[in-house]
Amino acid sequence: MKVAGFSFIRNAVQFDYPIVEAITSVLPLCDEFVIAVGDSDDDTLGLIESIKSDKIRIIRTTWDDTAKAGGRVLALETDKALAAVSPDADWAFYIQGDEVLHEQSIPVVKQAMEQYLNDKSVDGLLFKYLHFYGSYSYVGDSRRWYRREIRVIRNTGNVVSYKDAQGFRTRANQKLKVKLIDAYIYHYGWVKPPETQKKRLRNANHFWNTSATIAQADASVDAFDYSQIDSLAHFTGTHPAVMQARVDRLNWPFTFDTSQKRYSARVRFLTFMEKLTGWRIGEYKNYKL
Image (cartoon, rainbow, N blue to C red):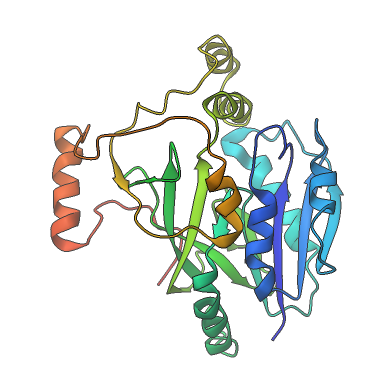
């Protein structure tokens, strides 16, 4: 069984993406790792080159900044990395620049890839998610956070990134048939110094929003206000070992009253039903189980 990892990145230093941690977290599962490094305003290339592994293959790319509709450029960059994966790889493991696989999940992922290797009815593996917010001590627990997403796909050449690169579909725009596994992706995109987070969001606005919205965002305060969130829960587990240095050097204060729930009446009812039944009514599912 051959496994390839793949990802894309640009301006990782400027916006404090844990891309090194992301890549190194999945390297134990991979025979190769393709990373598409876009033209950057910082030394992102040097950062990637600093990773000491002969498994890593860097491809240089130029982002199409005109492909802004719905963050389409992110999918295009994902597809560039996927296209560079060795054709003899059986599985391709996708990890984004702010995602990290916990080492505790490595045996689970490996076992699942081996189990479904010859089952061609399985197009990929579906992972569970933890979304950290504000600091490394809180996770989002409301309906605004997606619970699952595809991160391992069968390397058939018939799979492409979908919309803003959150998931995948076939070239014929069909949902992938996947198996849910008990493995977690830790999403750290909402844990950055408040000033850096604001800069990241201003930059991200250029890939989703109109010029008027961008101007409004640029005119706002210089630090992101983490307090404006509907609901959080305390995180009581452990972080991936590759993230520990980042956890240790966190240097901004953030506390949140986890008993506080800023829900509308509708969301409060839907949340109650989810806790009662386990069913998230109206959940977006870009896959088939």
